[in-house]
Length: 113
Image (cartoon, rainbow, N blue to C red; front, side):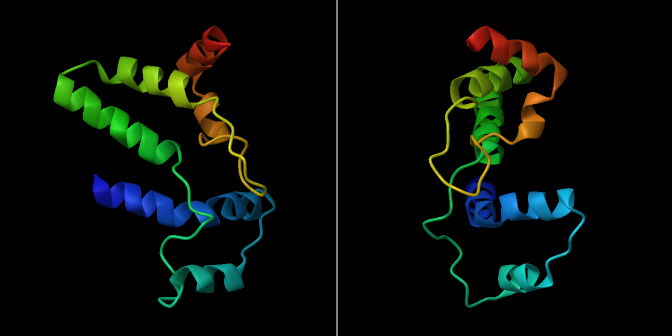
């Protein structure tokens, strides 16, 4: 679990630009080489916790406490899903836009407002 969270932190500095490149059907080879460069620091001040880490922790909690996975995921989504990121060039919150498109969660988000 710790490895998954560290991997998430390491990847967040690239995730938004990758999303934009995908959306615009662009392959940024220079950026890809930067990702593969072993001299680049793994974690930087641009790294942040995302929905991947938050939901990994939610699943761990569900397993350890023998709780319903769906209920725990919804609880974490409600708790952390609307927290804004105070960073430029990233998604507006730690949760990607696709998270909100999941049918049952959409209702939870509306209830949380």
